Length: 374
Ligand SMILES: [Zn+2]
Image (cartoon, rainbow, N blue to C red):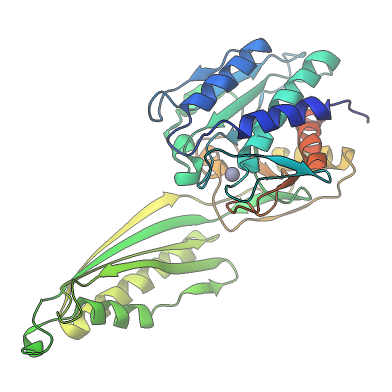
């Protein structure tokens, strides 16, 4: 199969997109541009306005050439991480980098630009395909906020593809559940030199608790971390208050429950050991999922990648994507790769070649859906 995606036009649009700042919670300006670009292609982008200052999830539909085929969804996100302002992309030896002072924002604007090029291709070549829904979420980098806020009634598709991973030869079928922790110890302040016996150290309580927690890679599918600790007031004061923040993730919901119980018991024991009070708050962030290798979105993604000459495999991911919320909202989603590298760092980059392949992948998925679901 041969596609004639216009790689130069795609690169131009990608470079233009990353120059428009869109850090999380400040997506509105970029969304205006994206809305205009979609309108130029005849697509109306609906904004659910669940974000801040006019930002929201954008949804647009490319009508199918065969209305009997099932609609499919492509999800990408429009927000980028910091440092992500004033991005100056440069192309060197076929790879797009920044000047080293910001991220590039190929996560996820490479995929956003690729959707537009795929729409142009599908409109020009008119292969057999059903309706294609495009979802552009806000706040993904801040904990999948846009997809969490999304009204599932806004989507018609029951097959989806989240275009947001580094590895193009992998179709992600499994992602963890994650829950976050805030624990606050309250001890008793006292002068550390003159009357230490009157104090209760919140820092000692936290230290005892952390020391008995299984952290890091707890098992092959479970991880846990205490990532932040804040407390104390002065060198010579017994610390009255400590706040620690952490998280736990697992591909297995029961293991996650067990890990949370173990960490909770450790937190309690740390407080009991010195007589400090502890307030423990766990907040589930998203639910994990596992799509079967023979489920429709996975089969379609693998077949589409094969048409691009990519021999892909299925696997899991250590973090959540918008797919976690979309699956929970009734749209089973396979996560496919964009081919970016070193995301969330100032070394972030993407080969121009992978931009083109991402657009081709979107086209191929639409065409494969016609073959497999038609
Ligand atoms: Zn991303």
